[in-house]
Each structure stands twice: as C-alpha cells, then as structure tokens.
Length: 414
Ligand code: PLP
Image (cartoon, rainbow, N blue to C red; front, top):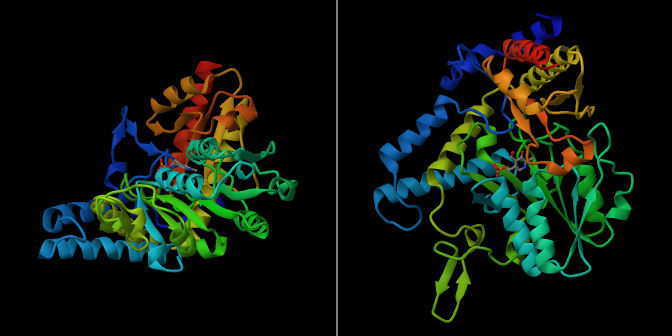
C-alpha cells in the first residue's frame, strides 16, 4: 500500500462500507468480484433493499387518492421522499422536485415541453460534443419538431470542453444542456461558468447530473441551473426512479407533457385544468417504492464522510491511472485535470470488446463500447473504450485486480 493509499484508508473504512452491500461478497468466474461498472449503475446497500421490502410488506397502497390508513402511510412516505431529495440537492422548494423514471425521462420532459411552447425556427439549443445520447437525442427531436437548430460546444483532445467561443455559440440560444460529469470520460464540466454565460443571454440551463450524484452531494442552487436531471440507480438507489429538479417559474410556465390521473385539477369532456406543480408533470401512478428506496439511499449516502470519500475516490483514480498507464500500448481517452473516478482506455491493435471479455474472466466488471456517447467516440476516431468507473465501496484490491487482468489480457491479445 502506498503512502497515499494508507492515508485515505485510515480516513475511510472501505471494508465497513463493503459490508453494507451484500452483492459485492461473491465470486465471479471463480474470482472475487471487483465491480467497476458504477457509471452504468451502482450497487444498492442493504438499507435500500430493506426499505423496498418494508414498503411492500407493510404499507403498499396507491398515493394521494385513498383515505384509508395504508394509502395515508404510502402517501406520507412518498412525499417525505420528495422532501428528502429536495433537501439533498438544495432545491429552493419541494415543489421543484418532479419524480421521473430517471435522467432520460427528465431530459425528455424538458425537451418536449420546450418544443411545444418555447422553441421556434431561428432559435438554437446548445449541448456539447461530450454528452450521453440521453442529452442529445431528445434535443434532436425537439429541434426537428420546432424548427430550432442544435449546436454543440466542441471537445478538446484531453476531454475538456472548448469554451473559447462560448459567447458566439450562445447567440440565439434558448436553452443550454450539459452534463455535470461525463459518463464516457469522467470529465467534470464547469457548470456554473456555462450557466452564467447562458443566463447572460437569457437562455435556460439544464444540467444532466446522472453521474454527479454518486460522488458528492449536489447543490442545484450553486449551479444556478433551471433544470437538473438525475437517476436514483446511479447513486445507490433503485432503478426506474429519478427526478427533474426545476425552477418553479419554469414549471408554472410550461405546459404538461403527459396527460392522465394526478396531473389534473378538473376534467370535463370538453377540456381539463391542471393540478399545481409538481403534480402537473406527474401523470399516472408513480414509482412509489422507487421514491422511498431512493430516499433511503440518500440517507445512507449522507452518513458517509464526504471529504474522505472524495479523497478515497481520487486516490483510486490515481492508482488506476498509474497502474494501467504502465501497460504497453495502453492509451487513456480523456485526461482532463478535473475528473470523477472514471477511466476510459484503449490498447492499440486490440478491440475493446475482446479486452473486456478477457477482463471479465478475472472477476472484474468493466464496461466496453461507446457508452451511449457515439459522437464522443467519433471525435476520438475510435469505436469504443473499456471503462472502469469507481464508487465508494471500491478498494485498492479492486484496482489491482483490474490492472492485473488488463495486463494479462493485453499480453494474450497483443
Ligand atoms: N446522462 C448521463 C451522463 C449518463 O451517464 C446516463 C446513464 O448512463 C444518462 C444520462 C441516462 O440515465 P438513465 O439511463 O438512468 O436515464
């Protein structure tokens, strides 16, 4: 163990954290599991699993509609989860939290509402060359529908955004949508700087926070974002739940995108009126258990020492880069100075798919392919990368297992 590893491990008890995640304690292909695919989805601590089971065993009922005890209990827990999330992200008010299925649905909500009433021919939407497909395709659809134009901030060779022409790019822009952290390369973007420039020309700002929630607490007010999209499953919560956090003035102004129960105030055969925000954007029976599970995940995550967590994850990142960097022919894609613990790499002459298949033989779970960021791969002239992404429960043993597995695979394939 290096001095840096020793320093972080005394602050941060990874073994204790790992014990909270029963899934990690297993063998895969005869080797201990090293789960390094956290940017795709994180594992869930036992307290989240318990919260889901407890809800279904004791309190399951539909929310808001019933007067019976179970309906009241379900509603209370579901709405408390909204309070919990509002507090966690430092929302201005609980009514700014709309439950969605995840980041993808949250971005589609904004894109479709903007296409309906905010965008017109001659307007522009600005994204970046380093976005997940979830933050590209909804804007392509919105621009097609409204006649607006899609523009993007270019990407530098190190995986940072080239903001040198931002003022020119912002001309005529109605909305800017960028990720806080890239899932493909790990680059952390200067969200506040982009938001300030966008607001200076009257554009709205959406932050895709899918990868931002897992590493640290989130502060939507510090970003000064109008919209923030996030997924529960990327931050130790269940799949199928996430949220859009949106400035209330925007929620009042935009028209609903889905119609159905819950989102209405009155319905006649001739027409309907809308419920107050946030319910105006929550048609149908929501993912009640998911919201409760997500709140349990936030509670658990909040119990960690966040300064120590940051140090631990950055030490894992440094150890990964140092270890993999010594492998002959290995090239990192994305070397930004400010990075989340996500490492993307290729080995010259080796297909990433073959590499990841062999790495899996050593019990190491990494992801391979374009990571839903095809324009980024095109920018670097590669079909895909192998990506290792860390979370709080990863240990230096996981990293060593990755380095050894990659070395062995590279020897076999080169
Ligand atoms: N944006 C980013 C940066 C992501 O990493 C992901 C998922 O990997 C998404 C959006 C989409 O998230 P979800 O599939 O949970 O909706």
